[in-house]
Length: 429
Image (tube, rainbow, N blue to C red; front, side):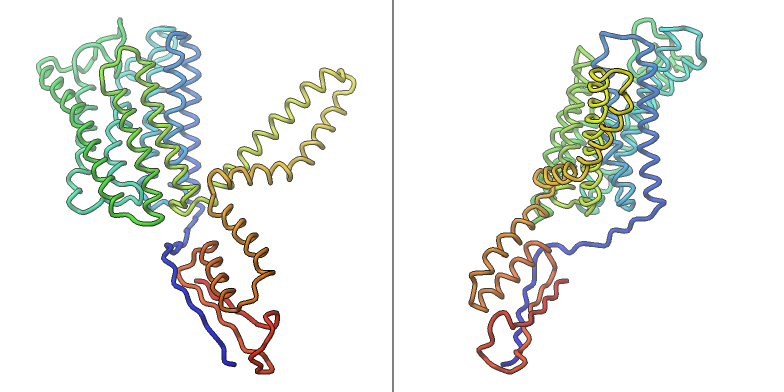
């Protein structure tokens, strides 16, 4: 009996090499650290300003920069060649700088006048940092998910957001009248306002606000065309990106349309940003976008595990310490530490299983597939059927480009070789 070889070609995309370099990771972590520092400093001045009526708006100002910066930092660290990460980082960092400058200027000019220098300068500089998060939305939609335009003819459209951002920023910086991106009653006058150019600057400001929504709709059309041409796994990735992008544009309307309450406008935008970030997370974790799902999976697992164990340890020390009294506090701390250490591995497995079920369905389904195949293997006796099932399981769990099964002949040359004497060899690549 000669050897038999069965080959199957898979249509699943072949994974590309993930080039992780320390320098790129440092850039990603640096972006995240700067975003956290900006948010923390802005929150400090927001607390000093004591604005209960605007507490909701301030809370949203804390969330929005991180909602852009966190996925941007991850993509920059692990996919530095993709401009999507850089755009998200710019949107998050500029929003954080705008928040800090606004709160600092408010503290210097209103809450405690003269206590810190540069209040007018901070409010004036805010003109250059609040609009990029709005103006870059159309460019982001044009480039998702791989960072390239749908076709070269879209290149002129991609330059328009940069022109509009410069136009609106300069118009706001040199417009006469109260200073600030969102001037409040009693705000100081713009020291560099150009009164003769008032009408021109106001018209430029109006045109910029009008162009961005139109560009966002055009970018959504480009994303829909890209989605229409996509197939298989790429279509699933784009689907979630498209969902999030559409809701991001809807949220953008909260900032561009005249809404009386600042908190309501920011809440609408924050919901859009949150939906977009959730869409990116599903595309990455569930459908392997950017092929960093394993890294994000580990980050999510150990992040949740740290929070759960930290809360459990803190709660145990606090509650048991109160019950046991001060003289036995060291025993409570030691016992809580041992309990947390004992729960580490079981909790990690539970959190990992929950994350896999929710996001990493490929790994979870692969484990279930292998488990079901192992049970079925005991009852299968037909060699041809078994060979086809082996190839199907390998293709489903590993998703290779090509897989081959080679059955070597029996050492005795008998055609009635029992199945358990066969010597299969599988190539998957």
